[in-house]
Amino acid sequence: MSVVAEKTDIVIIGGGIAGLTLAKYLAEDGIDFILVEKDKEFFKKACGEGITVKLADYNFFDLYESRKGIEKVTDGTIIYTKYGKISMDIPNIICNKREVEEQLAYQAKKKGGIIRVGSKVSQIKRQGNILLVLPQNIESRIIVGADGVNSVVRKYLGLPRPNCGIGAYGITANIDKSSDECHIEFKKDVAPYGYSWFFPKTKEWNIGIGTANHQYFKESFLKFKKRFPEVEKWVGGFVPVSMPLKSYGDKIILVGDAASQVIAMLGDGILPSMICAKIAADHLIKMSKNNFREMDLSLYEKEWQNKLLKVFKDGYTAYNLLSKVQFSEYLFHLLIKLMCRMALREYK
Image: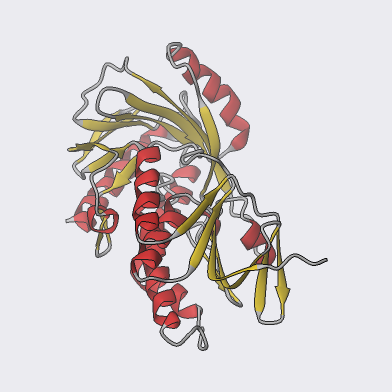
């Protein structure tokens, strides 16, 4: 006896920032969707919990529409190299990412959205014009892959995994630095082809280390860990450092890390993911008005590229350039200084 499949218009696979932002906006417009998240709790990915306040024509607070989980807005960032300190006076939000994700989920569910945690998708099948999500047995007109660097949806589309850096973070209260700024170390003896960070929260600090070159991570992490023996738990994970991938296919789109929608220079993905999710929501809502009979999902990619492609290209170019000059820490220092000036002009 066959089991009758559950039916919905859209399945969102992945309940991180990208998937939950999309769910929030779809729910606000009454779109029929189901979001499935493999973990039972939110915020399982390693993250510095730092967020750019604004990017392109978007502001984080306008998209988030809450202050829940916002711990601090810093005045800027101090960057440390072997040859000194560089100040970048661009504000940063430091959040409790679990609370931010829980708030996005709350906003979506409050408007009627369906979110199911502890539900891992293993397979996608096509049945005529319908997509089947397994083992949940959900039939959907459209699938959104918001399921991170190891995306099941991206694999279904036959797209490659993005190149990834690796990082780990921990929480401590014992940092002797100004809590009015974020602090980043770009030093070879700390993390070759990477950096360490110190981001102030309300009463604690999110600290961590990451590198794009995996062969250096273990040694760098163990040295960093010894500096902070009071940290009880370290959480590691992968962050895309590629240019964004193709983000759509037949009845499928990708958002967030699944599409490598990340500013590669610093692994900055929260606000870019939210922007791309909002753009995706706008297009899906528009398609719903015609009962999804006309679906040109390439329009989603064209719009996010129009808004963000230059930002992604600049971040990727900076990442590549700085990787190539690691042999000279003085040249690296000069380039960081120049890039900070350029970033400040762009921000203003």
